[in-house]
Length: 534
Image (tube, rainbow, N blue to C red; front, top):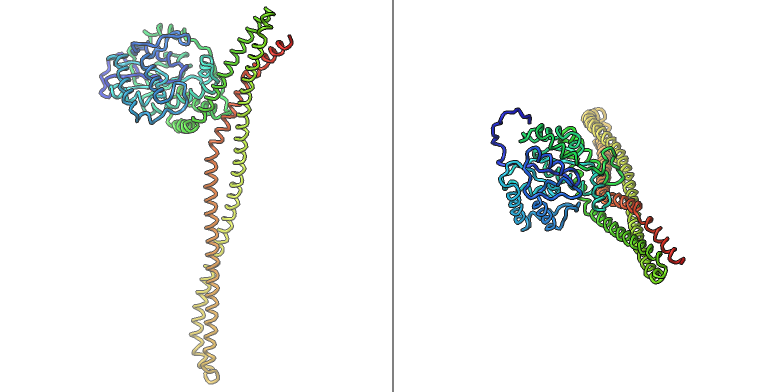
C-alpha cells in the first residue's frame, strides 16, 4: 500500500492486533528478515534469544516461544530436525489445549498490548495450524512473510554447524517450505528470497507492504541508516544461487521443483496455477517421508560412527607421536596401541559391511524394479494385442450385422413374393389343369413353397446365432482387456515405492562412496605397519 502521508481511516475489517509471522527454514535469512521488520516499526518480544557465533547480530525471536515449540514437538515425539510429517493426532490429544493455553500466555508476556509485532521461529513452519488457532483465540490477525534461501546454501550451513550430510539438510528444507506454503495458502502472505533482501531491502520491504496491505510505522528513509548498518554485518559463508540443483534422486528433484516455484513467486508474485505443483510435491514427500527418515537416520548414525573413528584415530596418532619420542614407553604401550588400531580397523570393517549390505539392498531393489518393468512391458504388449483383436472382432461383427440385416431384408422380400405367387398360382393351377391335376398336386406345390420359407427361416436363425457368438467373444475380450489394464495400473502404483526406495538407496550409496572411510583406512594401516616393523 502506498503511503500518501495522510492518516488513513481505521478499517473495520482489520483485527485489533496484527502479527507478522516470518516463515522459513533454519539458516534461510529469517533472522535478517525479522531484524529488518523490527527496524520498520514492528515490536519484538521482550525476552529475545541471545546472539551466538552462528548469529552474532541476534535471532530476533522469543526465547519463551522457542522453548515452548521445542517442548511441543517433543510431546508429539518429534524435534526441530525431524523431516517426517508432524503427527496430526496430537491436535486431538489432551496436550493440545494445554499447549494452547501456554502459548497464549507466552504471547501476552512477550508482546503485552502491542498492536503490531513480529513473531519468528523456524519451528512455526511445522506448527502453523497450532499458532493460527492461538492467535485467533487472542483476536490477533496474522500476516505471513515467507522467506527462502537456496537449499544447498542452507544444507551447507547445517553441515558446518551440525556435521550432517547434504541430503539431511535438503529434506529439512523441503519439509519446512512445504508446510509453510500449505499452512498459509489463501491468507495474506508475501514471498521473498534472502538474496532479494540482501540485494534490495528497500524494494523488498515495499513489496511486502503492498502485498500485505500494510503502512509501515517507520518510513524507509528514516530507517535507512539503521537497516543498512544491521545488514552490513550479515555474514554469508555459502553461496549457491548460480548453481543448478541436480536431478539424480527424488530428494534433489523435489527440492529443485519447490525452489523453482519459490524463485518465480519471489520475482513475479504468487501464481495460483503453481498450487497443484506444491500439492503434488507434499503428497509425494509425505508418503515417502517414513522411508526417507529411516535412511537419513541411518546416514547420521554412520556419520557419527565415522566421527568417533576419526576422533579415536586422531588420539591414536597423538599417542603414537608421544611413543615415538620415548622408545621405552613405546615398547611398553605397543600392545595397547596395536589393540586400539585393531579395534578401529574392526569398526571400519563394520562400517564397510554396512555399506555392502546397503549396496546389496540396492541391487535387490533394482532387480525387483527391472522384473516389474518386464512384467509391465508384457502386460502392455498383451493389451496391445487384445486391442488389435477387439478391433478385428468389432469389424467382423459389423460385417455380420450388415449381412444379417441384408438377409432379413431379402428374406422379408422373398417371403412376400412367395406369398403373392402362391395366391396368384393357386387359381390358375386349378383353372388350367383342374381336369388333369388334382388337388394333391396343388398341395405339393404349396408344400414346396413352405419348405423354401422354412429354409430361409433356418438360415436367419444360423446367422443370428453367429452374431450372438461373435458379440459374446467381443464382450469376453473387452472384459479381459479391462482386467489386464486394471492390473497394469495396480502394478504401476505398486512400483512407486520401489522407485522411490531405489532412488534414495542410490543417493545414499553415492554419499557413502564420497565418505572418509578410505581416507581413514590408509593412515590406520600405516600406523599398524610402523608398529609391527619396530
